[in-house]
Length: 376
Image (cartoon, rainbow, N blue to C red; front, side):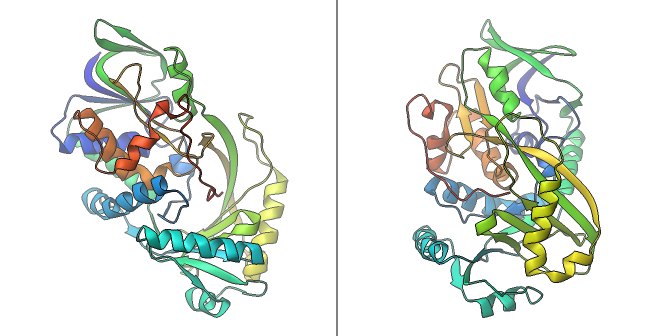
């Protein structure tokens, strides 16, 4: 098979990039996915979207993503809503730290604000505020329907004759005569340009070209309950326990909580997670103790040393581009990343200049970025 652009990875990043390229007139596009579309981090994510980070790169990239999310929602026909984020703080040192974070947000036009426990109750009337000293409210943040966003993107692409292959695993990437050859379990694909958007598999594939990308899987745990009428509007983060809760569009309560895990170890269900999740969130919502858990699943964050994604062309071969290592933020960034990759494909530079700081060569150049606001 031959194509102009091959995208390895059928998650939201790969799909939205194909949608973006299609809008620029590209039609010779092939997407391959080793399992089923969305089967990696995309269909396991919390659907949250925010710009309230602590690095300029994350903030400005996410501001652009937030500008683009309504366009994708309208174009592809899925729900997107700005219900906000609420960071609950129970320790004095965290309150002082987040006062500085809010100042940083304001310097980049992110409208987060410190709120009192009384204001927390106004935002989430059902919450028990005992022990809460303060919180940070980010009204710009929100959430989107992950399943509809992905499946509708696939429908849109197929209607425009873009080939999307499931169960097709990339095994090796090499260069031959100015083109790129990708060996798969279903034969070889020749392409002019390749976008590698396959999580940790991206690093494994590119290692064969002598490119070392420090991406490692870290197991994460989430559960979802039976559905209820709307009771929790924002995504709520309990900073001290690194836990979060939200109510998805269909009414189910979605909970994530960090427990000790080692890099690159297989994900497995653990009672420790259920115990911690229940302990943290029944304190704030005592009625959760009577709620049935429908499902509990695990997945991975594809982590980098500086918790920032790797985006852009390889220094070794500019016709191979990477979009991986999102460290838990791939879904929320997808529209902006798709735009940036399209701009690189067009031979230019991204509209958001901070993307240039996320390129693959930053690790060997020692230009890492600091980000501490990583959750779930």
